[in-house]
Image 1: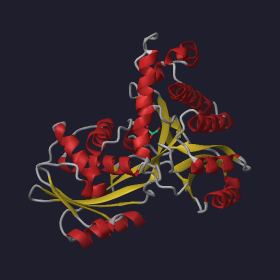
Image 2: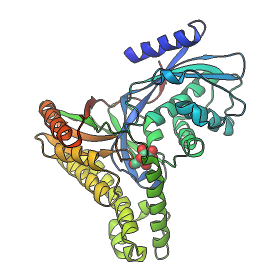
Image 3: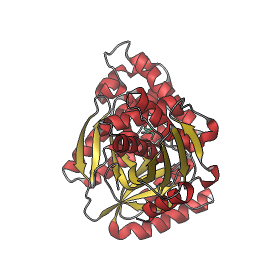
Image 4: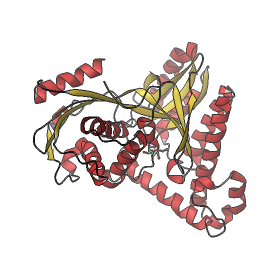
Length: 389
Ligand code: GLA
């Protein structure tokens, strides 16, 4: 409610409060397991959060776009137009909504008139909880509702991903936009990224909380490493394809991988591929464990996921490792791992309710002593996808 009020007030202050102003929300997401598998045709298991991004919007009579974010007040209003939308460095965050408008238009969803829009998000930015997918899917939802475009939420997610790939230049997979667009209260999404087949799995955990731990180390350089990991996986796949008929690393079972891995012929590429293959297997097993009510097995798989991301995929770093490893030592922690792209950002953990306070206190102390500044903690709830509010 607070955030919705903030965005309405920003809109009125910047653009004036008259006329037909509509408000929208899209969530952030956290991935429970299945990391760096989405661009390898593997499985992921994310859920949408109740924190996210809000927008207040009003149509204009001309083709202009004016965009403002209460999270970046110093950037002022970004002025653009429906005609000739291009990426401009100085437009900063506004490139995300611009990219979505551009990608939607490429698919035939062309707005006839422009709009004024104010955004406000309560996802800590740079935290790896998908503030960018959230603003992308939110923009897609604004277009869908205000202009009567008839695309579904999967298309909305694909438009967001295309904006990120083609307009922003980050070669991400579909997980984040899908999790945001298809989010459902108290459900995680088991998604096969090779086919986009998905199932909702209940994530009402009796007496257990989802605790997100933020390293408070901003990502940045990470994006180039992200594209590097993608390229390494593609190269490993290419080498494996010389002896096995697979379209993606996600199509390879662990036993098959063990039989074929010698053709990779490079130690680093082998470890990257091994992560993609084993993480996919862990994700499938984790969802099965949850269905059986075996939360401890689920937690063990989360821990194994982190070790694989640390040792084989090398996307964790000191901050994420310190937080996760400190969490592993605490009473009541069922599982903990880094979440999202890595290199900074957040860890996700499952913690017994009665232990949350002691756990966050102890982990905070260990982290601050070692890293020099404190982490942040959020006890989160799983929420619904984008909507008009
Ligand atoms: C980022 C990307 C996703 C996914 C994760 C790693 O969040 O946007 O597509 O690859 O990293 O699992």
